[in-house]
Image 1 (spheres, rainbow, N blue to C red):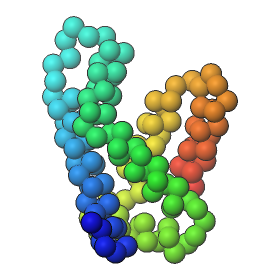
Image 2: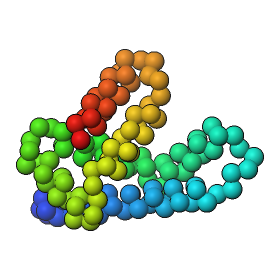
Image 3: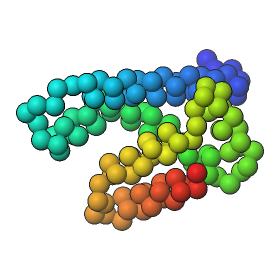
Image 4: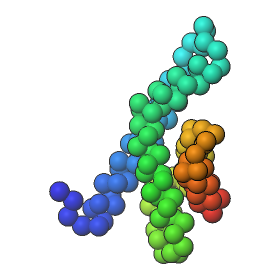
Length: 128
């Protein structure tokens, strides 16, 4: 059981770093794979699915939470987020990349809810 906010912070940080590492490993595997017999669309879809299997979905959720907290307008929280990322040499840039990719994955958004979600996320990303 998690007993204190600092312990929770440490556990979340470790979990986040593991997801980042697993998705980066999947990216390397994808780059090394044989690209014969597939068109570009199939290859991109297969690569995206492999990244999701490697933990991209969880990473997107975590980045969404971090992005929401970071852009909440509370300077001390934003600074703490930066501080936690810097402990392991990370920056805010990978969060921007993951969230931009997530917005693209939402598609063209034929319904208002999807469009609203995309606009909300893009607005937060622009605040980074």
